[in-house]
Length: 343
Image 1: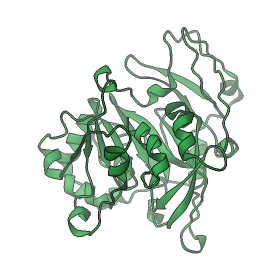
Image 2: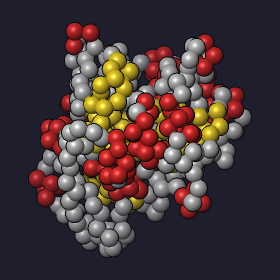
Image 3: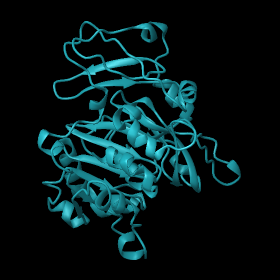
């Protein structure tokens, strides 16, 4: 069952201190170079680099201090990173988000779309059509099935490649799914289904949600919500977001070129009280970070938004998880970026 106390839990300490705590600034780690057998992974890193190798999941995890994140905003330069002799296989930075099977790669992923089950009944005009336009209508037209809590509880996720959970009110998802619905989602993701959560959906996929056996901290992935008591930061159609090296490597310059106008590596999108994310595990990384810094009325909120992940990537079992705090789906030019994150 979902408990109110757990829903309102917040990461302790300031976001700045929490990010610093996850960053090993020792000179020894900064200077350590590792040589891999096979292809050299290309990734720009502003801090320590750690290579994590497993039988099914292989990834380069990057960590940077908040100060380094700020320096990385704007244009990025990809650098060659050598890997250690003790690594016996090629490491691919893109495998942080688990690659789809060969069968899925040959076709468009089949999407399960799960809008807020309360708002879809009670709020006129919900959900907005922009997400469906970006994914189902435009581009390669991904197959699309609308899900209700009862569908998920009865096993309807089977046969779908990605579950997409859009904006709404996060407690509605938790309450309507209940323990059995959340267990169904967790089992499907651990078995290889992708999870893309946008705004309220990002809350659900983080450690704020009540999942069993996905991450060590209770979420689908090790991403916390910072200062959840001050969730009401405001709304804007002029939220600025910077692409990180991981995001550029994953999506490619062509997709980003359509979306990022003006200053290199920046895109502007809608923000509506999205969660402030914090990657707390070695298996999570930011693909985009916030440049804007909304602090609520009269800028009363003390914890920063700037420099925190706007898009966080991670893994849950064999499934890939993408948590998106802002609303990129509202920008037609960013359709390729959103579709790339969903794939």
